[in-house]
Length: 162
Ligand SMILES: [Zn+2]
Ligand SMILES: [Zn+2]
Image (tube, rainbow, N blue to C red; front, side, top):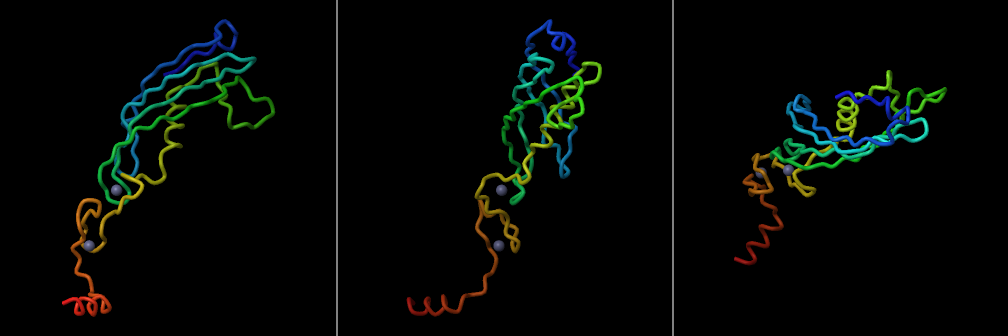
C-alpha cells in the first residue's frame, strides 16, 4: 500500500489515521512461512517539515520451537515509529525515511520492521527441555528412555538399600 503524504507535508492535514492489513504469508524463514496477516494501526502526523508515523503492528508468528521442534504460535505487538522527510539535508540519518514524490510505501516499511524484529531464538517456552539426542523423545512431555550407564556410586547405594 502506497500512502500519499502530500496533504500532510503541505500542512493541509494535521493527522491521518492509518489502519491496514498486510499479507506476509510469502515470507519464508528456515523453511517455514511463520507469518500470515499483519494488522497495523497507527497515525501519520504532520509536524514542522516532517511527518511522523507511529502505531503498532500485530501478528501471529508460527514456527517450530528451536529446541523441541513443537509447532508454536506466539502473538507479537510491535511498536512502529518513523520520521518521514522529503530530504535529509547533509545528514546521514537512518532513523529517517526519505520519501520520493511524497509517497510512502507502507507495506515495505512495515515488512522490513517486522523482519528485523523477529526473534533470534524461538522457543515454545523459556524452559523448554528440548529433545533427547539419544532417544529422540520430547523431554517436555516424555521421559528419556536411553539406557544409562549405571553410576557405580548409585549401584552401591542401591545394594545398601536392598
Ligand atoms: Zn520447545
Ligand atoms: Zn534419551
